Every structure is written in structure tokens, then in C-alpha cells.
Length: 311
Image (tube, rainbow, N blue to C red):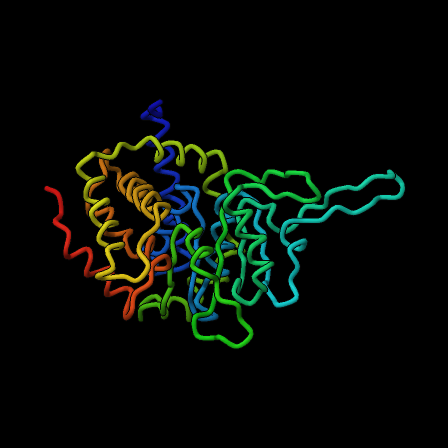
């Protein structure tokens, strides 16, 4: 079923307004903001790999406030237990029964800070919730809020006391992003207090959960031509033939790549998906899911150069 054109246009305008609002907090990060919105529109989750103090928490909080939705944060540490994330059943003597107390995962937007500092057991509790959209505690299944977005962070420069996510768990993240240092003009605005955490107090919602869901429906309805699908299949096949990568792209990675390309085309107000959309999301969607003997980013770039772009 195709969405109503007027409703689709309204949903797109709301998402673009959300992007503009986030740009007013994190100046000079339009590409990262767009990629976070793309993950949101596709129902995916984001792994942000960057140094402390780069704006990861500010981005998550600004997104939650601007969306008029609830926001949770978990600081992942070695002593974090799965129950802290998914919840626990506690016996209430007055009622003579066990009552479920939801964990931190029961929010529309969850910041999982320094996810690689928790044990694999705690990591798995979150990643299973991300994959299934629900948690099971004491044989009872509890659905998570919809939509649901996890922004997980990890510091790539620290290794002591960390538990790196294995490839099977990294594959569950829709994309991996790096905020990077701001450019000179953006950092000047930050030093003057024109952008950054100080702006959070004055933020007002510009979108609702209903707008978010409507935008997801519109993106899902975007058509993709067989020619473009053949292009994606060629890229995926080349990633798996062993000449460029030791671990190629999974089928889930391919599906996420197509979804990301659709969302990007939709945000750019196009009724079709182009090869440029696929190329723009190639590194964010696959960079954390594949392995190369040398530079993974260079290997992925080489694959793009090898495959003929459809006319």
C-alpha cells in the first residue's frame, strides 16, 4: 500500500526539520546526522565509535528531546548485569506475586555508553533485545516500545578492561559512525557556546513518535529497480570472493544496505533509489561487518571501483 503523497511530504518535512534541529546542536555534522536519521527510518541501530568528548551523548539527548520521546542511558561497566538492561521480576509480599520491573532497555531511544566495557553476557542481553524487539524474563515475553533505537558507543583507542564485540554481534548494528573532530568554524561556534550541550535546555520537540513511524512506512514503500538490485548483488558477491576481504558481507548487511539507500533517496525527495545512494551508505553499513587483511575501508572502496555503475 502506497502512502498518501501529502502525508509522505509532511513526514519528510518533519524529518528534515529534525535534521536541522540536530545541526543546531552539533554543527558541521550534517552527514553523521543524516546517517543517524537513515538508521531511524529503517528501524536499525547505530554504533558510534569515537573518542570521549566528541558529542555522542549530546547527539542522543538532542535526538530524544527533539522527538518528544523518552530517552534512557546505560553506562556499560564490567559489573553490569543483564537484569540491569532487560529488567527483573521482584516478589511483592503484599500482592503475593512477582511483578516485572522493566530495565533500561524500555525506552524509545537508548544510549548504551561504552558498550565494550561490559561483559559478553551483558552485551548479549542488549543485542538480543535489539534483534528481537522484545525481552524474555522468567518465561514471560515483554515487547519493547516501537519504534526503538539504540545508539551504542565505544572508544576505539582503549583496550584495557574491554570486551570487543564479536563479528556476529557487530552485524546486528545497522551502521557504524564516527563523529570526528569539528571543523574550525564549528569548533569556534562550540567555544562561543552557540552549539553543544548548552543548547539542549532550550530544545523543543519538532517531531513525534507518530511522525517517526509514518516516515518509516514511507521509506519501506520506496521501490527499488531490478537494475539497482543487480548492482548491489555484484558488490556483495565481490565482497565474498576472498580477493578483497577475508570476511564478506552477510545477507543481513545487504538487506540493510538496500534499506539505507531507500531512506537516503527518500530524505533527498526522490521517488527512485540511485547507485549514489548505495555508494553513500556502503561504508557506514558494511565497515563494521567485514574483515580485511589490511585496511578495511580501502578494501571496500576498491570493491566500489571494480563494479560498473548502472546507467
